[in-house]
Image (cartoon, rainbow, N blue to C red; front, top):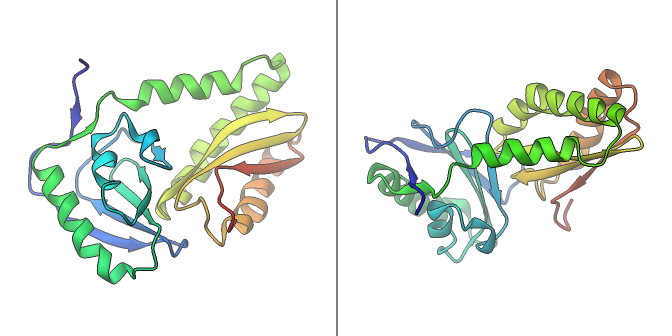
Length: 210
């Protein structure tokens, strides 16, 4: 069995931070959960097989999505309960779990994520498209990810074909009322300006409210 990755067993402080998505809340910790630049998004319990922490969070009947990044966890709720009712319970659970050294991941997702990104950039694409894909990935990593992580989510590269960039919206970005504006006015304009081959940016991983 692979060695489970755990956060250090030390005093942990956690605060909740609202995101542009009213259904998502960002819980920021004073300890590292993942390598910088790496994040994972679990839209349901079945997807969370590699994260004991996410599996535990899904035991709360109001948790509908879990996103984990370097030092925060974004939780998206599925009920009409107000966050004021839910935050104390979730903060107490996260604090107790991490301080006790509970496993965050069974296998470090960093290597798998890098391999998947590389495969998406190459695949059956032409050499020119591969170069364009890598430019897009670099721009998303360097300019987009730091900004959207502040809001509790991430936008990752999925594919590039004939001028169309497809991205995945993760964490609080999925279903966020302002996601369309961010995608079109922000990301699409950036990529068009920096990568002339780009004609349009479209998203996957969105909910009906997008």
